[in-house]
Length: 291
Image (cartoon, rainbow, N blue to C red; front, side):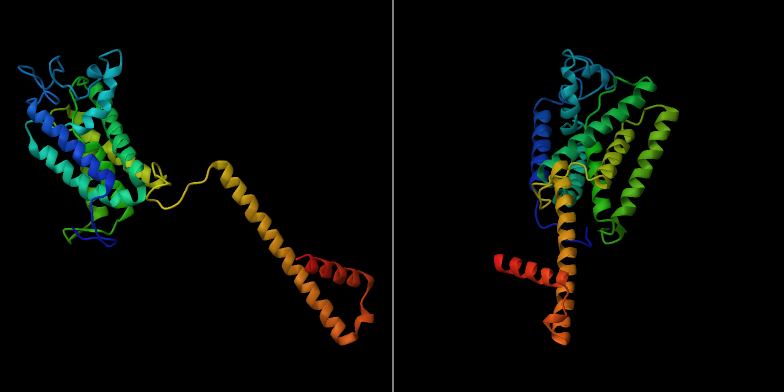
């Protein structure tokens, strides 16, 4: 990939930690023979039965443990299919390239927030549509929602970056979002059956777009380069700016009046000044002596 802006020179901190965490959980899932993402034995992928799906999420799994199961909204984002290594590798490649483009604007904590919120939005949209179709308990795993959030965010930030020196990034992102929208419509119209959560992709992409346009999640004290003032601080800055502007106008008017009086003295003499002009000169003289 080549870019119209600064080239990727190193792995950014937040993306590095997200990649490490995803890889660690993928390795743990391997050691546990897929229990984090699939049944422990004998069950079907459409049945979230006990003994498996430890980190996966569905409505049924979320209700486990008196609602503590909803923590799976976070764990599912770091868990990938045990039987499909490309699921993991593909998401990690997208996270590396797109996340590294996004982090310089988001900062460390903002990048983590976009990852998590994009994943949650993807899960909620997918499971809402799945519930309407009667698939509420199909477990969901993978970082695809978060990856789509980073893809759209990166495309908004560097729209003319060239992918493989051919396709502008904004075109690639637009095509991927269109496919996600189209496949979501197909799922809604014909039923869920592909094994790929296109609606989760669409949910993550929506968060990526909104986050860029509305300046969500930016860590103003980190890589963004300056501290974001509070609401009160912003109002005080505006008041101070207006006060400084008024003082500047007053100083300019006073200087102009002083120039006019001095020009009059030069041409007609001091005796030609009125009482108000003399008072003005005395006042300016006192101000100058105080300074």
